[in-house]
Figure 1 (cartoon, rainbow, N blue to C red):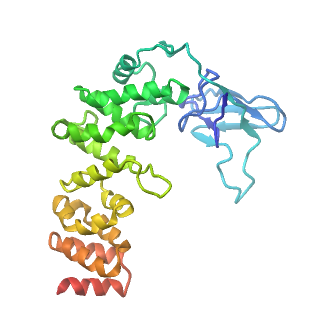
Figure 2 (cartoon, helix red, strand yellow):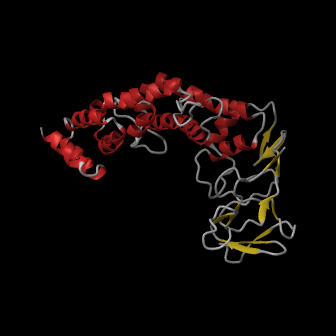
Figure 3 (cartoon, rainbow, N blue to C red):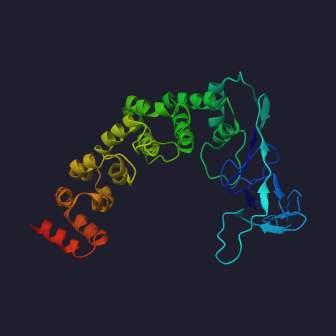
Length: 332
């Protein structure tokens, strides 16, 4: 099987990563394609770093392009001039085991549990310019074939680790790979370790707890929906609501509940703002989607907690004449 850098193979400047191994495809942003060919002249595209150490020049028999940052072939619009599409990814062979990746020996019988712990704490290589956390494990997951499930389930095992760094690494991985095998264990892990997570600082953001990071990841889980638009992980929705009533969740939490459980949101609007007043602007904005009769009650419930902030948010998010109607209603 051949993999392609699609839909837009990237040219990258000299500060970013252009892999040398044929199996390395464009598995993340700012990973350059090393298998480009020209559809016009038929030649492979040859890269070279220019003397300034910043630019990389790409050349075929009929084109030349210099890049300092990134250029995604075919991604630009043709509003002003035709989009450049003569260069395409010629395809990358599969990454097959046994193999050695960055000095790490891999085979089908690899101890994946030990591997993910070791590489989470001491990554053997950090692809330059790739703006992801848990980069090495994520890269390996995207390169692997049949062994991918074993790897991601090993990462899920770190959800129960006593080392906060391993828990954070697991959260980072499942943020990148929301649908990977083992992600379904997140909700149960957070529910079972809630007290420990709440009292354990996040290794990357010590001012926050690991529970804050878990709540954000749970909200990410809700983006995976079935054919009806409902989250496939229903327990995750229940847990995010429980955490929200304790004031825990990302700044856009009200929008999550507007999308997936609006009746619950309208019924608990006052309690949510009491738990986390910083959600007031987002919740007032979300109330635009509430039925008109219910919207007034929602805003009244919020105003009992933070009256001034509600009025300010109404002035920002509602047009006339409804703005004055709502403000007058709150004055009663």
